[in-house]
Image (cartoon, rainbow, N blue to C red):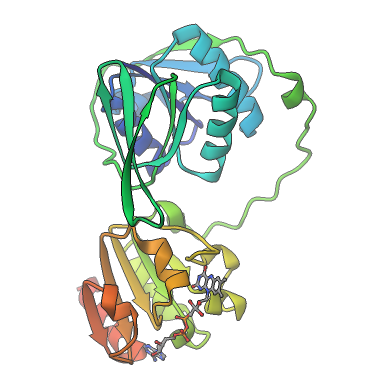
Length: 307
Ligand SMILES: Cc1cc2nc3c(=O)[nH]c(=O)nc-3n(C[C@H](O)[C@H](O)[C@H](O)COP(=O)(O)OP(=O)(O)OC[C@H]3O[C@@H](n4cnc5c(N)ncnc54)[C@H](O)[C@@H]3O)c2cc1C
């Protein structure tokens, strides 16, 4: 199979995972919306790169137009993107423009004959489903951390310019300015392999939660109580009305385990809870639990990890 992966010029671990996901189906061409990092692309087995001419816009509508041009030029069997907000915005547009099938939040991919079959968990991870995309190219967004970003070194890719005609709908919108969110230097919550989350039990002080997250190289999350209290930014909220996460390790600190929170961590592989109350519901889903005061438990954990 031939797969097109849609990437920005700066590649995060989620983008490298998307490339690895694409490689499970076949040979990979990358559509890069800017100056491509050919060294990294070569190390991850991308043999061919297309760069849209005349637009380096990262707006989903412009990226979808570029992807349509690449699909018309290459006729790939699948188009793979990350399951970020932007990736899903492009995927939806692309599926409409190409009149083909799309599957989001995919955790495994395989080719069956000429058909792409994508696995995805649904209903907060309680069901596993498989979707065969019968009208291609299959537009796929891959869930962060579901694939290993394994290297597959190859020769430096050939870079080709791609003529793109922006649609009237895309041209009708001009983005005048954009304010980036201040970055913490920590991985994005939805892509993180480790998440340390704090709840009401931290009583307004997230320093120990942040320190543990930094020792583990992880992201900081929170319950709605903590974000509503203004102890931490709303972007850190995990749950039904916040972010859905799928880390290898989740550590819940001073969190009771309400379903509105825990529904969004069904994708977590290992759940650790620290809580003073042995009857807290979070212990029902925790793989490891520590009954204790976080102000005593966390400093010891941090010191042990530092050692
Ligand atoms: C429609 C709806 C949507 C919602 N969406 C979300 C959502 O997206 N995300 C979300 O998180 N919530 C959401 N909620 C709120 C949710 O129902 C819970 O109220 C919330 O998750 C509880 O947060 P918490 O665990 O921090 O607080 P609590 O339930 O008050 O738990 C605090 C825990 O900290 C422990 N503790 C106290 N002191 C310490 C200490 N020193 N050391 C260790 N442990 C300690 C306590 O024993 C307790 O178990 C939603 C609610 C509704 C109605």
